[in-house]
Length: 272
DNA sequence: CTGTTTACCTGGGGGC
DNA sequence: TGCCCCCAGGTAAACA
Image (cartoon, rainbow, N blue to C red; front, top):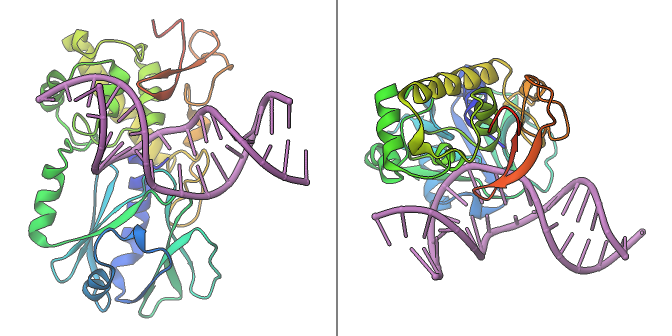
């Protein structure tokens, strides 16, 4: 499940070689992946270069040299990676991008087809994040802003941290990893956090995300980097998918339950 | 307006 | 071997 560290890893790798080459062609094999008019997107992208690549939360923005932007969201099983130009594709590969003077093509593969590409004008791009009510990115958000956003929403902390309008970039894996490190129960009432707890929570969020980026993300099932490699943060997980294993802090067995409709992994002793 | 549920999809695993 | 059902979880839309 691509969350902030996985998307950041892909963006960092794309930045290395994507902007240098003009896009010469796009093949689409499953149109619903493109949320905008397919022909318009092709028209605005083919023959142009990507001049900048941005990430906000789990969204990727490709800024084109004609002031248009392509926004990409990988959702659950989306993959964006390089392959040899002549390599055969499988039934889950929905888009192929070809480039001038490049022996590789960029593929979009997505088993569950939840992800998507959207073409935005310059004006739509500046409004996009605001319209979707997406908060500041988890790596950039300040403590005062995080506090302010937390005040807006009541509920169990697990659900609040998954809400992209409170903090952008966390998903199910990293919320569980943050909560076990903070020794906070996923059921904890977010309105009852003290000032010190909120401050510590934000510090841990940033620290866990940065540590995961250094390991190129967590590969549990589908995620791969743009260079086709698996992440390595799954070796550092303390809670997610660790049910039945001893808590690294107290030895109590990690349990799995459901909170806010999500599979939730926690230490019943540390996170009361 | 708020919180909850469902839809979007496919593959994998358990039960029988 | 195969069929059925449930589960995985990010987001939008429908719902209560």
